[in-house]
Image (cartoon, rainbow, N blue to C red; front, side, top):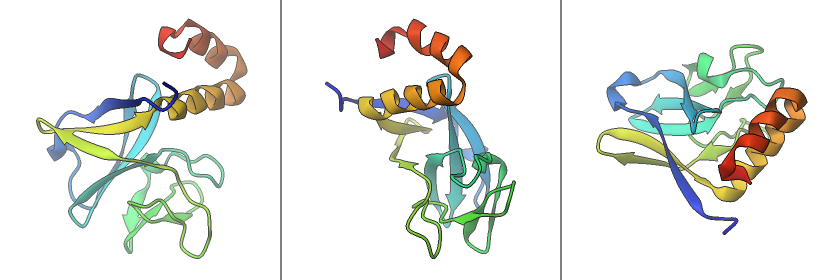
Length: 136
């Protein structure tokens, strides 16, 4: 069941993210997500800017683009694509249930996220991954 889909609530109340705003949310206790609300659409992206890892949820929407707060790199606030480039920020499908916003993540994506944490922070992340029964 490597591609089993998991649903994770990231925003309990949609009114917490006003139109034209960006925020950081946490899914499943550790995965940081950048939430955007632009032109009536709420979207979820990975919170790390591919340029140098800046926290996109602390950025802003300027001229219709999500701007990284560290170096000003821009991305489409819903597709995650960088204008003029082939790369971008990974996105997550969103779902609204009983007024709360959630993201859908495949089991494969969860395993890849765990491996990325181990590579980025070997000591603490490895202990976290090894003790998480969902990842064993």
